[in-house]
Image 1: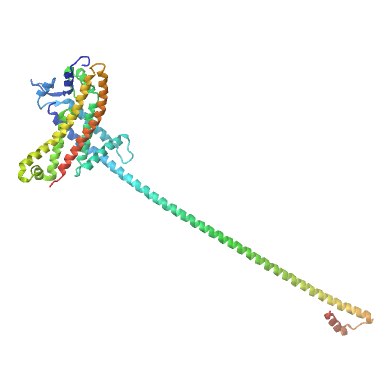
Image 2: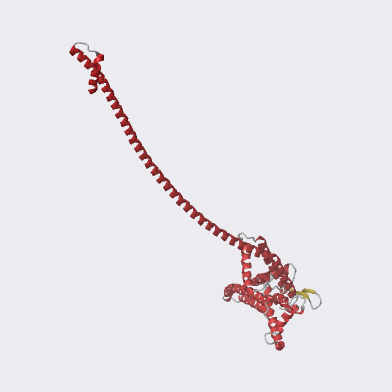
Length: 289
Length: 156
C-alpha cells in the first residue's frame, strides 16, 4: 500500500472502515471487502478489529490491576502498586463525592470504565498508520488477503458499537437499580408523576422517557463523536504529509501538537464517561418522593 | 460505521471486565489501602504516645536530678557541720587534756615539794642534834629532847 499512490478519500475510507466479519449477500461467510459489503451484512456481523483491540486492552488492564491487587499490602507500595493505587484512589474519591448510596458495584464499575475507555482512546495517539499497516501486513502475508481490502480501525471508541455497548450496560444498570431501590411502582411513578401533577402524566411520561433514553444515547455518542473527530483530524493531518515540502513538515508539527492536545481530550472523555455513569447510578438510587 | 452484533460482544466483554474488577481487583486494593491508612494512623498515635512518654521521662529525670542535687547539698552541709563539731570537740578535748596534765604536773610538783620539805625537815632535826651535841659537848638525851627538836623542826 505504501508503494502505491492512493486518493485522499480512499485513504480516509480505508481508515474509517471496520474489519467486519459476517455473511455475504451470496450466503458465504467472510470479511467484508468494501464498506457497502459490510453494510449489507446487516446486524449479524462482527467488527473483529473493535472487539480484538478492546478485549486486548481490557485484558491488559485487568492483568495490570490484578497484579497490583495481589501485590498490594499495607506496607510501602512499589512502583506498579503505587500507580494502580493512585488510579484506584482517584476513582474512589470521585465515587465517594458523587455517589451517595451504598452499592459495591459502582466503584469497580467506575474504575473499569475510566481505565478501559482511557486505554481505548489512547490508541488514538499511536501513530495513525501504524496499527492498520501492521494489520494489512499480517492480513496480506499470514492470511493471503488482498491488502486493499484489509481494513483495521484501531481505535475501538471510534466504533459506535463499542461506546453504545458500554452505554447500554450502564443504562441496564440504571433501570435495574432504579427498580430495585424504588420498586417497580416507584420507578414507573418517577417516569409518570413528575415533574407536573399526576393528571398530566402523558406529558410527564414523554418528558421523562426522553430524558431517560437520552442518557445512554448522549453517553455513547459523546465519547464516539469526540474520539471519532480526533481520529479524523489525525487522518487529515496524515494526508497533508503528501502535500509537498512545505506542508509536509507542517503536518508533522501539527500532528505532534494535536497528539499532545488529544491526550487531554481522551483523559477528559474517559473521566466524563465515568462521572456521568456515577451520577446516573446515583440518581437511580435516590428516592425523590 | 454500522451498528451490528459487535455491540453484543462489547457488552459481554464489558460486563465480564466489570465483574472481574469487582471481584478480584477492587476489594484487595481497597483493603490494602484501608489497612495502610489504619497502620499509619496507629503509627502516628504511637509516635505521639512516645513523645508524651519522653516528655514525662525527661521531667522525671529533671526532678530526680534536682532532688539528688538537694540531697547532695544536704549531705555536704551535714558533713561540714559534723567536721566543725569534731574540730570543736577535739579542741575541747585537747584543752581538757592539757588542763588535766597541767594539774597532774602541779600535784606532782607539790608532792615533790612536800617530800623535799619532809626530807629537809628530817635532816634539819639531825643537823640540830648534831649542832646541839657539838655545842653542849655532851650527849643529849635524844629521847628527852627530841620532842623539843621536832617541834623546832616543824616550825622550820
